[in-house]
Image 1 (tube, rainbow over the protein chains, first blue to last red):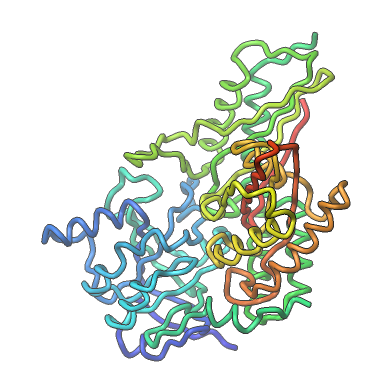
Image 2 (cartoon, one colour):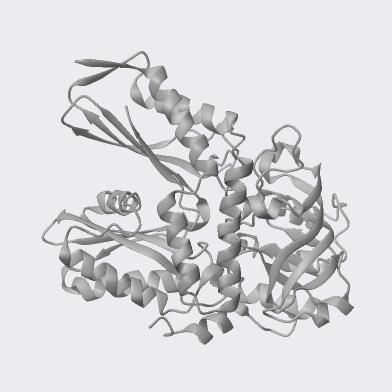
Length: 186
Length: 279
C-alpha cells in the first residue's frame, strides 16, 4: 500500500480521509512536547494565558531527542510512549489540536475526544530515532528550554513516516491488528 | 593483588556507553532479521525493515539508535584478587557514566522522582555487584529505556500457582503491555529469591545472548512455551498486529522462601543495547 502524503497543520478535510491502518508521510510544521511540557501547556490554558504556539490544526509529536552534535539539525528523535500524555490530550484537542504522534495505547477518554474534536493519533516507529531524524529538516526550541530534551521544539519535517492508529471514526489499529494476528504464530 | 586504576574503569565505562548507543549488538540484529523473515503481517514487515535500517544508519552515522538512551545499568563481577586504586568503584562507574552521556551526546534521562527536575548527567547509574574468583573485573552494561521498563511487573505469587501460574502471569503481562514497550521485546523473567532479588534476576536474564539456550532444560521448556504464547497474542511489531511480539524469553531462577514464589518480569525493547568488557 502506498503511503498517503499529508501536510501539517491539518484541516478537517484531510483528517476525515484518514483511516486506521493508513501509512502516511507527514510534511510541514509540527511541534514537540512530552510530559513536563504538557503539564505547563495545560496549566496555561486553565489560567487563560497564551500558549507558546497556536494549537489550531497542529500536530504534537511526543519526543525528547538526544542532544544534537555540532552541525546536526537534531539528535536521535523517535517517539515516546503516549499514555503519559492522556491526562492532558483531551483539553489540547478541545483547543484545536488535530494530531498526535507517539507510540502505544491511548485511554478511552482520549479516543472519545478524538472522535468529538476530529483529531487523529499517529503511531511512529519506536526505537527508530536515527531513521526518523533524517526526515526532520529544521528544529528550533521555542519554549521551556529549562526542560532540556523535554523543551518544546518547532520542527519542519519532510515525509515523516507514521501509521494512523486511531482515526475519527473510532478505529483502533492496536485492537484490530491484534485481533487479525491472534493465534497465527503457529 | 592486581591493581586497576579507577580512571581505567571510568574510561572503559564511557566507551561501553558510547559504543552501545549507536551499535545494535549482533545477537539483536540477527534476532530482528529472523523476525522479519518470520513475520506474516505486511505492516509488521515494514516496521521490522525500518528498525533494521535504523540500526544501519545509527552505526554508519554514529547517531543513537533511540533517543531514549536509557538509565545506565551495570552488572559488575569483581575478582577477589583485584583492587581498585583511586576512586572507589561506584564513583568510578558513575564518572564513566557522566562522561559517556556527555561526550556521546546522549540524552540525560535521570530526574528527581517527585519534582521531576533533571539531574543533568544521567547519574546515578544502577549498579549490581557480585564477587568472584580471579583478578579481573567484568563489567556488563545495558542502556535501559523507560518505555519498556514501565511495563515490567513483579508479583509475589503463591507456591501453588506453580509453573502454569508463572506462564500465565508472563503472557498476561505482555498482553497488557501491548504496543507500549516497543515490541518485538526481549522478556526477562526472574523466579525465586525474594522481592528484590527476583527483579534483579529478571534484569540479569536480559544480558544472556538471544537464542543462547537456557542450560536448565526445565527453564528452556518454559521459555519455549511462553515465547509461543506471547507471539500468539497478535500484538506484533510496534503493536500494529503480527506474529513477532517477542524476540526471546530468558528465565533465571534461585531458591526462595518455602512460603513464597516471587516472580519478576522485566520487559526490554527491540533496541536491546547491551555490551560487556573484562578488565
